Image (cartoon, rainbow, N blue to C red; front, top):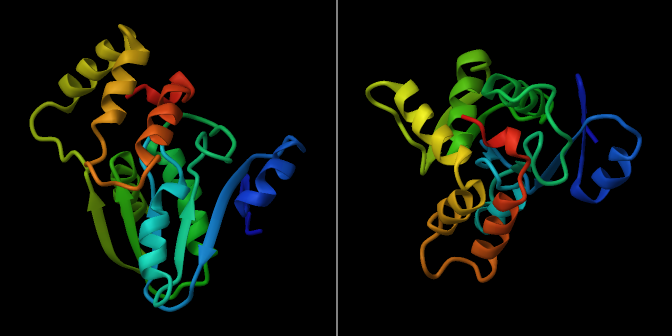
Length: 193
């Protein structure tokens, strides 16, 4: 397990045990070797396991690092709900990964996280890959207000429709259902834009 400031990182199999001690835990998995390392950062309501097809494709050549962001999967809730807090936890994992060169891969909200990581800690980062990331133009506050209004209405229906539309036909069997269910059960404070 990597020892992070404020978090301990464990493989998914260790996280449940560590979480019972009351310490904050960030579940992290490393597969493969080789550089540049690929550090995969998922979106809201998702988890590190959602990158398994990419890890399977790349881990024979590169070190692949997946994690459950704070408040997701097997990781504990974050100290505060902010991109900055999520970025700091991933920066610690990045710095302790042992990689001399690393590519950050972010899906959806994970794209916002990797932008913040690069802004705060560009050391060893040789690339950024954005997957289905909204790049806002215009007034960001208007977008956030619309999302918060939809979430304040029928939260469950909005979350289920948003996650159901996330994947294309032909995706890994069961992945859509896992993500939709995980999103529907996500702590509502993590959904606030």
